[in-house]
Image (cartoon, rainbow, N blue to C red; front, side):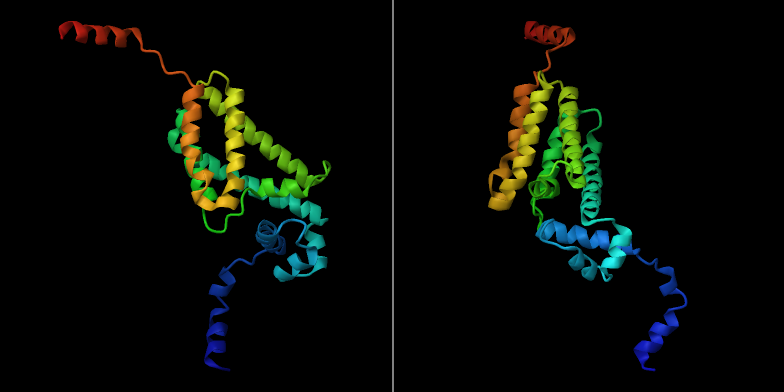
Length: 225
């Protein structure tokens, strides 16, 4: 027995046993996540996923009834990660909806411009899933409806005169930003997203009218001067 083998054997009774074994289902899903995002849903087959995950097609179908169901679960997982990002971005500005909208787009710039970004998982997937009854398509539609609703709600809370129109415009800006990032990288149109958002907010949210106390104070200062 060589030195390396002795070392591995000595540790197998304690430290190795303490490391939890990754479930086959999790390995498959984790592998699919990377392959789907990099190459697309249609380009990657079941056999490729199973092989890359270190298993076989029989084990694959024990974990997922079909590739379509795996796609749906992949998208659901992407959605959970996206909402975690969203909630973390707005959390520091609780109670200030306008600042939350600004923070979303400031953080979105970092999200979309990082190395390896290939745009929005859902935007990429919807192109490949035109069938309305595909389980993945339904996940996409629910996700985008949730995004639209959240932007409209924040627009309303920020005091927009037409929160539906502002929310939808912000969604168009966010969705379009992913695509221009792929074409132009971070130096393209996406670089002005933050400025565009603030311009939109200024146009849709009326300035706060001064209170009576503020008006009296300003008048008093003028009279003393």
